[in-house]
Image (cartoon, rainbow, N blue to C red; front, side):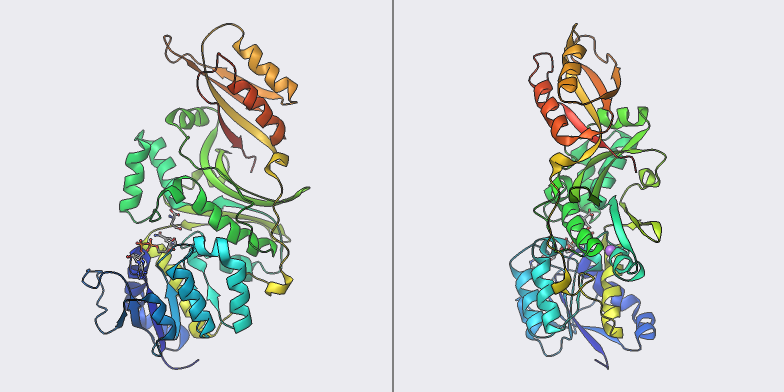
Length: 430
Ligand SMILES: NC(=O)C1=CN([C@@H]2O[C@H](COP(=O)(O)OP(=O)(O)OC[C@H]3O[C@@H](n4cnc5c(N)ncnc54)[C@H](O)[C@@H]3O)[C@@H](O)[C@H]2O)C=CC1
Ligand SMILES: N[C@@H](CC=O)C(=O)O
Ligand code: NA
């Protein structure tokens, strides 16, 4: 490809509008960096009249986004509608079939259909770029696929959802309520169209599925990921975490274990001494442990208009330069099957908070449940907060197998003296 690079953008929301503005604002810089002019020639969006802070009146307007694939004035299709099926998927498939490079930020679509789409793109010899889909503005796909290409990855973990990290940080710092802080994250353009994807851990799992595929050279296995969100993390747990020397973070973790590759997303107690404990607000972080490089930590803004547009435009620039790496880091025929180790075999330490009636024998019953399931307690903390009501009891354990821990928790939950479902948060050594 030479001459001007003509861009068609589908979806002009937070990210699409940001991309159009960034291509306008950095036009000279981008042209200098790739030796070509990059122009938006066509768009598809729902509301023609909406002011997006960028003049798109010279662009061809498509009411049906799928028409961008067949538009003769579009060289590259940029999909920023979202959703794991429907128009976004059909547009990408049509663009690949038409031999047009695709740039997308759509992690939901890639997590569910990434292997099939990567195969279609490779067969057609068409770039399918998705840097914005994982950790927003952090160039983590480029780092893993290119900068760290000579390494064998052992483990990758990180803060992969800006909305959750913003909520956990703000709740801890201000004592504000969950729903109130989530509304802020939505106003700031961080949250997904359906914010339950954020707070229930699904968005982080989408990103982990992609990250883990690129890191370990495997087909994607979103369905195999153990996923928990942050709805049950309370102000009480945030305060106990600090008291015990931890901070609570929603992490995505994928790593090599004796039972295969484990993939999990859940709130974690992270030691205050770990750098990731201090990655706050909308910032994301990705920590890669690999041989021979050792440890690599990447951090930056994981959501919002500017950071996400930065990643989308970097992908466009790669296409303008003719730079093209295998979609998932390996030719699709070389990818290993995407199988995930069972969560029951996870081995780690735990924080458990119980709300109990303050009466004799409670701790003995709880200790018996742990003992009978080979779980060794590390510490027990009981503080009466309200003499008239139930009191919190916090237990931390030594490392143990998840299956035994779950059996113990089930037995503890059934005790008459335990008045709420036990809250369990895994402790990560990091
Ligand atoms: N907001 C963020 O910080 C980030 C978002 N992403 C991803 O980027 C994509 C876009 O996200 P946002 O811009 O935040 O969402 P958004 O909801 O602000 O924008 C999506 C836009 O697509 C439009 N749209 C919906 N159906 C359409 C159709 N059939 N044809 C044309 N336009 C249609 C909507 O009207 C809306 O304006 C999603 O896949 C999201 O997961 C990725 C990284 C960060
Ligand atoms: N909703 C996502 C947006 C970026 O991927 C997040 O909060 O991280
Ligand atoms: Na990224």
